[in-house]
Image 1 (cartoon, rainbow, N blue to C red):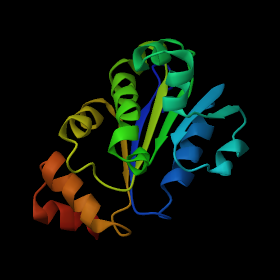
Image 2 (image 1 turned 30 degrees about the vertical axis):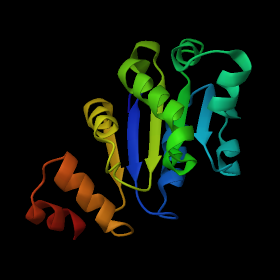
Image 3 (image 1 turned 90 degrees about the horizontal axis):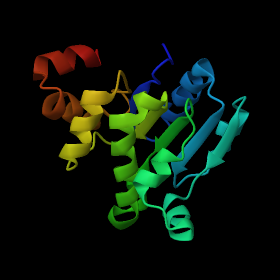
Image 4 (image 1 turned 90 degrees about the vertical axis):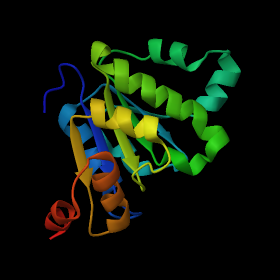
Amino acid sequence: MSKKQGIRCFFSGATGSGKSFLCREVIAQIKPKKVYIFSSIDDGDYDKLKCTVMQVDLNGLMQKTGADVHEVFEQMEDGCCCVFDDIASFGTKLAKNYMELRLILLQKARHKSISVMICEQTSMAGNQKGAREVLLNCQYFFCFPRSNFHSFKNLGKIYLGLSEKQIDHMRS
């Protein structure tokens, strides 16, 4: 993996399937100086990384500073890493700003060498725009099909255009 332009990874699987663990392993390989965690879950395991790790309450930050998501993106350091871990669990209203920031990062992060990691339990069914941006901009996809095959099947069929036979072959 080259971190020259930052990397963009998508991890999909059920709770406990290893998404966050593998995400941390990838981050350890690219060695960013700072990692921003956007998640409703405070996973202390990110603290084991050899860099500055910040759990970010995006909505609170925006309210406190008056910044919008574009300004938050502009203030991020070159070469940092942003992790979006199960942001759908925030609920539709709270997740809106996280989804918007994630979209901006997917489209523009490579210009600032920012890496983006997205960990989702679902295949983003119902979020066609978000799914399209993930497919267009992520370089690496990690799916845990045995732990959440329904999610993997939706990802393969709806967003990747795979046939049932191709999906079954990947499962085995």
